[in-house]
Each structure stands twice: as structure tokens, then as C-alpha cells.
Length: 256
Ligand code: NDP
Image (cartoon, rainbow, N blue to C red; front, top):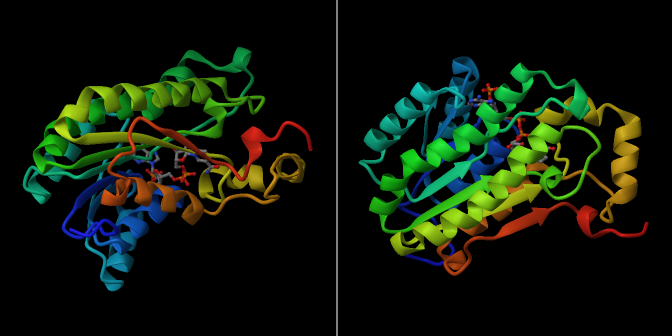
């Protein structure tokens, strides 16, 4: 197999109907992978699947709420049958955020944010492990956030989940290297997706973000998905346990 191709490889990408996940599905397909994705909305999923198939991409999908344990089990059962028990790539993309000051989070907010962002990532890794191992060449990519590295002012519950994911990346890299499974983490800053539409309409937020970002603009989803795809390629075969920031220079900017 070519070092720069995913031909013949299978991938699971959670949350592929919008934003960064959608771009990841397209990049992995573009490199030749066969992809299974999920979201909670059947109609939106069907629309995406139709579009992808018309582009010649090999994509299947199922409705799944990754915050539910039984949904996660069903998802992996489906992936097992679609890909005959072998999975090369697992991209843990789903994430949600409600930004509030720490004092204002309710117990329900807290458990919802943890269930979607962290419980799902942990449990889906456990469930995907036998499939990744069986493929003989596995790669996990987590999608974290710049909020795991620097404070964005509000949203501490989300930030704590993402920081946990950064460390989970490293533990899994060390534990599962013996099974030829690599584990890496991509850390985006503000990216132009429906998740942050409301923030991107807020001129004060955007101006402040841009003034601190050396590249002076917000990322497009494709600028994040290209790193995800790279990390899955055989070309990245010696890269594991890494947490890599895609932020236009935001987090290294001391003075501006
Ligand atoms: P979007 O909200 O634009 O897209 C999220 C995708 O996940 C949709 O396909 C959505 O479909 C699906 N999804 C959401 N919740 C669930 C769920 N419980 N079960 C299954 N599918 C679900 O998000 P982004 O593309 O912006 O974010 C992707 C990742 O990138 C997240 O982990 C986020 O934290 C991270 N990130 C994003 C940044 C940004 O600025 N956009 C910055 C830093 C990190 P549906 O709602 O129909 O289920």
C-alpha cells in the first residue's frame, strides 16, 4: 500500500453530517478510505449520504446519540458488520459546548457535557479496540479544543473534558502500541462550523479572537480535517501519542 493513500482502509467518524466531521469524512474518502459515520438526525444523515455517493465516495451511516451507552454498542455492532470486524481508523469527533461561567453550570449541564464529550470518547475507544486490533494497522484521532490548552474565559466543563481527552490520547498510544494502534489528538481553535455560528456572529468575540491570532482569521473545517487525514496515513506511521494544535498561532502568541 502507498504511504500516501488510505485505499482499502475502513474508518468510523462520529458526527460526520456537519462542520469538522463532515470535512473529515470527505478527506478520508478522498484518500480512498471507506467510511461509516453517525449523527442523531436521520434526514440530515440521509442527505449527506446521497451527496457523498454522488461524488463516488464509499460512505455508510447510522443514527446514533453517542451520549447513550446502548446507542454506542449498537453503533459498533453495525460497524463490525459493515466492515467485517476490521476497522483501521476511528475519529472521535463529536463534541458539544455550552459556555457559561463555572458558578452557573447546573448538575444537568455538567453531566450532559461529560456524557457527550468524554464518556462517549472513552467507551467508544473500548468498544472499537478489538476491531482496530483486528485490522492489523489502527489509528485513533481525537478532536480536542484549544480550550484544553488556554482559557477562553468561559466553558470550563468543556475545557476539562477536552484536557482529559488530550491525556487519554497519550495513555492509549502507550497501551495499544503493541497492537499496532496509534493514537493522536487534533486541537482546533475557533473553526467555521454550525457549533460556533452564534459566536461568529458576535463581532466583539471575533475581533478579539482575530487580534490574538497571528494568521488573523478563523479556521475552515478543511484546515483541521487535513491534519486528521494525515495522521491516519501510513506516512504518519511513527507518530503516536501527539496532541497537535491547529490554531493559526493563537496559543503561542505572547505579544500582539
Ligand atoms: P458541529 O456542531 O458543527 O457538528 C457536530 C456534528 O456532530 C454534527 O454532525 C452533529 O449532528 C453531530 N453530533 C452532535 N452531538 C451528537 C451526539 N450526541 N451523537 C451523535 N452525533 C452528534 O461541531 P464542530 O464540527 O464544530 O465540532 C467538531 C469537534 O470539533 C467537536 O469535538 C468540537 O468540540 C471540536 N472543536 C470545534 C471548534 C469550533 O470552533 N468549531 C473548536 C475546537 C474544537 P447532530 O447534531 O444531528 O447529531
